[in-house]
Each structure stands twice: as structure tokens, then as C-alpha cells.
Image (tube, rainbow, N blue to C red):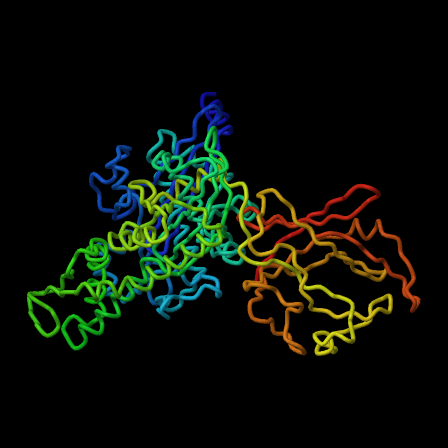
Length: 608
């Protein structure tokens, strides 16, 4: 009987988990929602083979917050694979000395920075630097599935071992839990779709629970948690403007916000379209690695294993500590040998200030460019930049961005503590109570359409092969651009955009699904047509985003048949495709008139 009461009580609780899979590190949090209780966010602080110590404390003093970006709060986004493509070690296990030796003996290969393989094609890599290839016999989707399954098991273990009835709690609540995954600003529906598919395959939700996988941008999650933590209260002024810059491991996300309200709850709206740049901390590392390979060529330190250790030491020491006042930095090599002509003294490689600056140049230039774009597109109203993320904690990067701010009359602030790695907790805050009421369209969004053929129009005449006669014997030409949302247009979170359609189907038709593709145009002003004359190739700037499909059975049945001039019995259907674009995902439905009212039908959104 006691079990039944406890089990019933659990049914009124909800479990939400968030996973921030970063390019270099991953963090996870969870929240138990209980009626009448203030939500409490809890980080996963125990990971297999994780170094233990005072950094794992739950204490929320200022110092403990500053130390949050320590081994206990996050783990490397790394997986070891054997030659057959089997995952052998994850996260902190990949830095364990015994595991590293076993990997070397068995020729396991590391999957590093694999998240960047998911990047949209329109995001270029700075300096033409290359993302490390995936191990043999391993696909990107497999890495995502394997890693998310590992994270799920660690969350399950943490809850099971931390709560007195943790096993029962997980068994009852996990089948209906929500999973919040974070993405860079530049990730779109196609990337989210692959991540959702991986989450289902990893067992985070079942196949019918795909809608319980939700997405929030890393920048939005970071600012929401910064606000929730109380660290930036003094920076929030009603009607003020600010820019949030999340400098992560692989990407830099920059968004401008207007503060509509502070009390009783924070309300924000985007004042400049969110942007994503592949300019994160890994590109500093890769520039340094290229330097090490050239400098150490022909020496005992040139082999792959030693090179990995050198890069590891650089990442955790020189890269983090370098500031504009340093004249040089040093990286520890194996042994005590000196090679003066290569600046090696007793096993320590000297890196000059100029060489260190060259490693940071590409990312710093990209970040400054992104801030300038956000500042200009936000009407030059922002007076403060909030920096978060691992790369922002670099003394050198911070000093260069402060200098940029002084040149533009903008205060650049870097709050200590939770905002360094708070994306996982911010994702929970977003799910419970999103503070962002409107966003700015990053691109033009629209659909292909047919328009009347104009013989005297030069643009039309070059595409004469695309003209056709419709059922009313009117000459039309296909492939024209029909815009739904313009670039930089404000999109309210709940606003629905509609585009009217008409299709003519024979009255004997037996299938009633209509599909149309949604495209983005990423340049300034869309042209009249979407493709080159006489070719099926999209003009530069156009990308297909998704395909919307809806069932028009009821619309078809409610439409009267008529005869065409050729004597064909047809039905001409008039309907709208309705899109909601203000959330982090596109949703759609169909509608059509029935008398003076609208009738609605569902639509699905599919990605290639």
C-alpha cells in the first residue's frame, strides 16, 4: 500500500534533463518538477574515471561557482573507437592513463571535435583549418548515438544513486521525461532532426516521444542562467540593449537583445539576428598544433602520441594563461633535451608572444567582426556586451574584446562563475519559462511559386522552357520566389505566418497530400527566380530548409468540382500553409475556409 501511494505521488512529478554537447566538453543537468515546489536545477557531478576533489562540491559560494568549469561539472566530448567501429571509452575515461595505454596498445582511434562535422554548409571554417576526421568505420550519427547513450546512462546512475528511491524515480519518470538539447545559433532544422533521431536511437525517448526532444540555442540558455543566477542583475535595465557573446569550444554565438521587462520576470526580444561563427577555442588549439608540427619536425617529439600530449599540455596551461603582458609561454615536452635553434631548453618549448598571438588571431578577428555586425544590426543601441563560454575566460581574448569595446563605446563584461559553463542549466530554465518573446529572422524564408508568364519580360523569356498551360489555359512559369518572412523581420514567438496556395486536382484523385519545400535565401535581396535558366541548380544563396506536407482530404471533399475548357472534371483547392518560426523549431499546419470560418489540418515538417 505504501508503495502504491509513493508511486502515485511520483506521477505528479516531471523529469526534465538537459544535455549540452559541446565541441570539446559536455555537461548535463536535470530538474524534478513537483507541484508547489520551486524548481531546483542539479548538475551531473560524477563521471566514470573523473578526477575527484573539492571541485565536486555542491556549495554555491562565489568561489565554488568560479570553479564550476572543473572536471566534475563537465567531461571531454571524446570517444575512443576500435578498428571495427565499436565505442570503447567515453568522456573522462579517454584521459585516464590506463585507458590511454590500452588505446595505444589496441590502436583505438579518438573521435575529437566530432560535433563540428554536423555544421551547416553555409558556415565556413576560419583560416581553412580542418576538423579532425572521424575514426574508420564510424559515422557522425553513430558518434552522436553512442555519446548520448553514455550520457543517458550517467544521468540514470546519478539519479539512482543520489536519491533514496532513485531507481523507482527513474523507472516511473524517465519514459515521459523531456530532453533539452543545446545547439549553436547556426544549427537549423536539418541539424536538429539528426540530433533528435540520435536521441531516439540512444533511448533518451521512445520512437513516439520525438516531440519531447526540444532544442534551445547555447547563447539563449547562457543568458537565461546568468540572469537566474543573479550574477548580472546590475546589467539589466528595462528598455536597455545588450549583446550576448558565447565563446565556446567550436562555435561563437552572438545575439543582440532588447530588455522589455525585468520585474516580475525577465522579458527579452532579439534586437539583432542571432549569428554563429566557427571561431571557437579549438581553432586556437589547431593553429598551435600546426605550429608544433612544423617546429618539432625531425625531432623525437614529432610522433603522433607525443604530439597529442604536447597539445594537451598547451590546452590546459599556456592557452588558458596567456595574456597580453606575457613576453613568452612555455610548453612541457618529454625529457630534458635542449635544442637552442628550436627554442627548446631542458624539455621545455618556448613560444614567443608574437607566436601566441598568431594562434588567437583568427578567432579574435571573427569574434570582433561578429560583435560589429550585431552592434550595427541592433541600431547601435547596445551599450554592453556579456561574454560567456570557455574562450571568453582567456585573459588575452578578454583583453582584446575589452579593447574593441572601448573603441566603440561599449562596456564588455565577463561575469565570473556559472556563466562559464551554465548552458545545461540555462536550457532547463528555458524549458520551464522562456524569457525570449520574439526573435529576428536571420535569413529570408519562402517557397517556390508559379507566376503568370510575361512574354516581354527578359527574365521570363530566358526561362521559356519552364512555362506551361494551367487548367484555365493561362501561360504560367514555375520556379519563382515567393517570400514568407523577410530577413531581419521581427518574429513573435507565437506568431503564425501563412502563405496562400491553390492546386487543381482531377475530381477522380484518391490521394490528398500536398507538399511544398521551404527555402532560405541567405543574401541581401532575393531574385525573382530561384534557379538558373534551363537548369535545376539553385542560384547562390538559396538552401532548401525542409518540406511541409499536409493532408487536404477534408478540403478536397468540401470543394465543388467543375469542368475545364478541355472538359476535364477538376477541383480547385484554395488553402494556406501556416508556419510558426518564432520558436527554436519550425512547426506547420494547413487551413482552408469553410464558410466564414477556417478549418485546420495537421502538417508535418521533414528534413533531408
